[in-house]
Image (cartoon, rainbow, N blue to C red; front, side, top):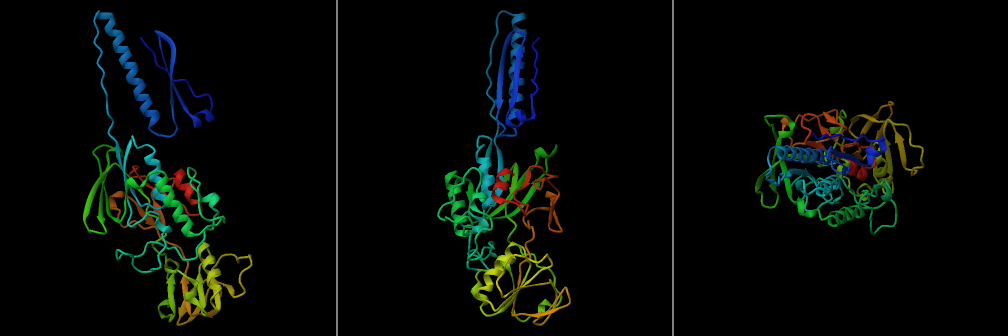
Length: 404
């Protein structure tokens, strides 16, 4: 009788770098070693199944030779059906996801949808602050003079580090968009992407067994022709981004403010605030950056926030004040009881996570701007074949997308 055993991995580091499976039989002292790449999570399982199949065949053949002098060998080739994967979005998150599935194209058929006419998502700049060419609300929050607040040496995907056309470390949004287009072409990803296509609905079709039998119905619409289509898939990667739906806190009386009131999502250029007194509510990355930019043209910029005071040198016409708690006409009351007056008001208060296309059967909810319930901020607990890539905020984004 033949015996099967698996040699234990000698160390944890060996487990990280590779998995080793060894088969030995009583009729032969030779070991057949199967090296399984860490790259695919299914590879070890598939290798084990293949190994079991080979052993069973060998054992059956051995039994046959003890009972008859004639044996017949039948070779059966089994073709494993590819899994159908849908990726929603072709910005940086979507492109990183498409690339990972494309690296295993022998296992997956991939289709990606994006509402824009080009890849790049957030990094596509538009002068418009209202509607895009398809009469949909503008998706991008990019402003004209934006440069990255991380050096390109850190931003790049680990598998493609070729940022071109800008010698500075903190590059323009045009440079980032060009990088994403080059990434797409370098890895031949366009073949998987349907541009100018809106995903209107994603509905889980629950299987009779466990979650592995769940499929998804993806209803999409061609924004040029208005034709609709339905795609069935085995897995969903949600990569629609989270910098397009403004988060606007309630401020009592703000409707009485006579000047311009806007969110940073609609901000494009500082010249629009020339010679004005402007309140910027919020002092995270965009709030500080926009304050510095507007200060070059405005009379005064009130940077309103409740954080510790910024100690770095700021322009002399930037004044840090407490958070705004109410408005009465052009007069704004602050948390510390003081009053200021302004001509314009800009919310730099971030964004909310939004998935209007998800059917409630997905089990996903957004509570207090947290997407729940997810394992490791990534995998839908109820439907593990649904992933949400790129949700963490205070991270180095492109490498995180790649790792996820």
